[in-house]
Image 1 (cartoon, rainbow, N blue to C red):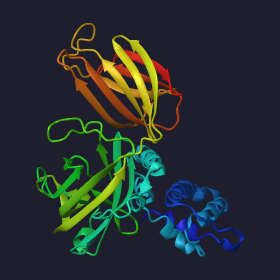
Image 2: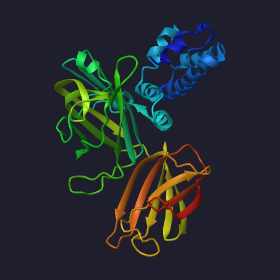
Image 3: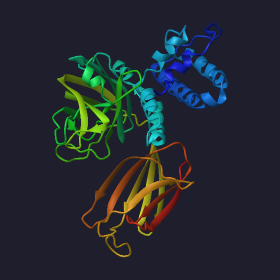
Image 4: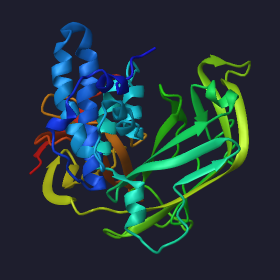
Length: 390
């Protein structure tokens, strides 16, 4: 079994009387938790090589722990409670997985900019009907963290259960089988996002299950197919109803080739919570650079991402000759590596030209390029437009 990073702080002998207790806001506490979590996570990877050296560094992290506690931590045993947040467990669950690097980068960056759902509720004193924790038939589901910059919405949630079948699972899904979309209903301001926003709950070392869900607001439309537009610093309400949960094993399959199930529970789980569309840190900058018919118009920096708005030609015509009008596109750093794509939107006009928005995870890189290549074995370059982010 993987060694839990929660246990590392508990091995440290620290004199907590040496530190001054400080009072922080809930948002400051969340940011401190994420920074400490990443430090301790890296310590775990170095522990065997460096012997007792890791404890010195961990002691420094433990000192930070004291500043996070609203009432002060008097015993490092309570460090486990400090790190029992969903982003921490999501990061730990990526260890050894195929996309460990990408997932860790995304969860860390989004986690640093996220706010606790309780903070969102507290800002709306007097408003009723919000439900951040729901329990039914031995299963408790809670919403934990929220991130929204007007382009994407992330929310994390956790699941705990005393059901033996579900507890044997590697993951718990809200969709039972292919085509069965009745297991949940997820709406944002009445817009139906069921079936394409949620992911399975993944099992953590402490036995709980956690997940993070992304809703692409750029590509969202209402029932009349109109673009879903949210006001700056406005409030949107997420309504999530679940009536079926099924446990799955990721390394075992049934006769139909589906993941083997460990159990299923039906019930009524309803979560409803507010989200602030925080565009306060969004920064727009002009680029207006063109190559071979590809025009990069402008960029928008958000709390955790970078959005480019690009005008594309009809690639079916000369000199491109792409009968599908669908080349590969992406944003690269100065080392030639693609930045992680978070979401994308493309509005295709009748003449085959289009306006595209692409959003990538952004960590402060200054020198970037937008590249377009053919989507075939040759991957011939159509355009490479260098630009700088202020």
